[in-house]
Amino acid sequence: MFGFFRRKQFTEPKAPVIPPPQYQAAPGTEIRFQPELVPQLKADHQNLISIYLDIKTAFEGGDYEEVAKKLVHFRSSLQAHLLTENVRLYIYLSHSLANDEINSELIHEFRREMDAIARVAMNFLKKYDTIGVDKELAGAFAKDFATIGQVLTERIEKEERVLYPLYLPCY
Image (cartoon, rainbow, N blue to C red; front, side):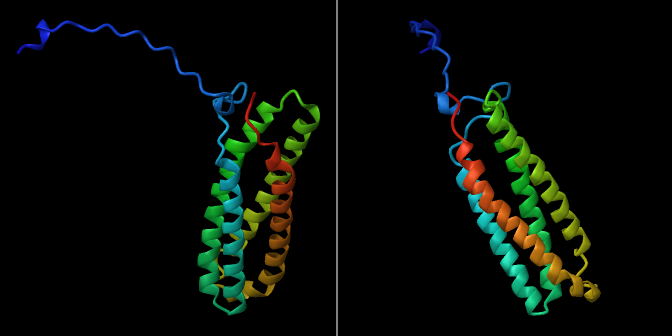
């Protein structure tokens, strides 16, 4: 009737749950290995390529308003991808491989190169954000756009071939 007359059951205190090694944080961080990260980053790459091709199609069709809309979409997708890479990939790798001089230098170079590419890409996007209303920008757009596409394609291939295989669980 009244719950306080019942006999209290004793339960053993539970030991703290220690995550398996593949989910432990990289040394000196709270950033854990996430098995879905590389597939997510590769999917981001495919999305960026798809948006790039949509921009190209719109530009070739003379639909500069659509180009401007797609450039906004490209910018937000690229920024989200770069943020994920910076926080979840580069920091994890740089801490996980801190004692590996060769790979640490490789990661540092990748990050520095990506920062430079990101600055160029953001400047490109800023330069052409008014292409929908300023048709004068169309003349220089094609060349700059092709250059950005080539640089990003080469970078994507390099990341997927060289950088992403380094992303492994901490042991």
